[in-house]
View 1 (tube, rainbow, N blue to C red):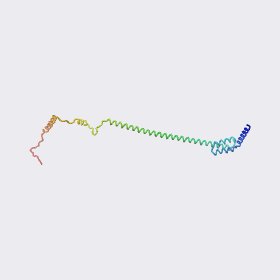
View 2: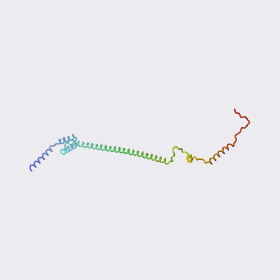
View 3: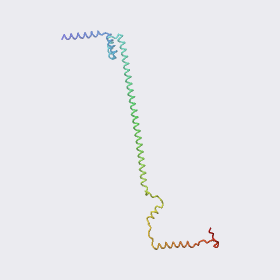
View 4: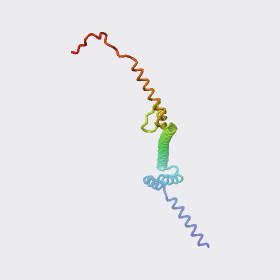
Length: 202
């Protein structure tokens, strides 16, 4: 038990001696290596640890200021990049929104035009149906027969065909014709003014 305790004490003394052996120069060199490899957080951690042990070391102080300045610049660059990325994303979203709106407007316009064409076709069809019904309601004229006022009279005449005359009707017709001939014969022919005057025949 005593041996273990002695060994532990020796290890603690060795560690304390090693810590004391690390000088301000070693902290500076280690921090500079991290800075060259662009590992600013590790370099700053190493320098801050050396500053705690050697607060008056000028080289560690200047390196710490440089590392903090570099860290601030990196944070600013990251912030600018983040802002730029956000602006690009916002611009992209706006462009997509405008494009979508344009597509929606175009589709709505096409739908409106299609509705107007369908309505016009429906009105034309309705007008054609009305015209057809009006024509069907009008009386039809037989083909090849002109319209005239004597059409009904001709139909009546055609409806009453000629029939044979009775003997009495024939006698009356002959008597009427004889009476007309006698009236025509009553008027004497004109005589020449001078019956004794010879008639010239040349």
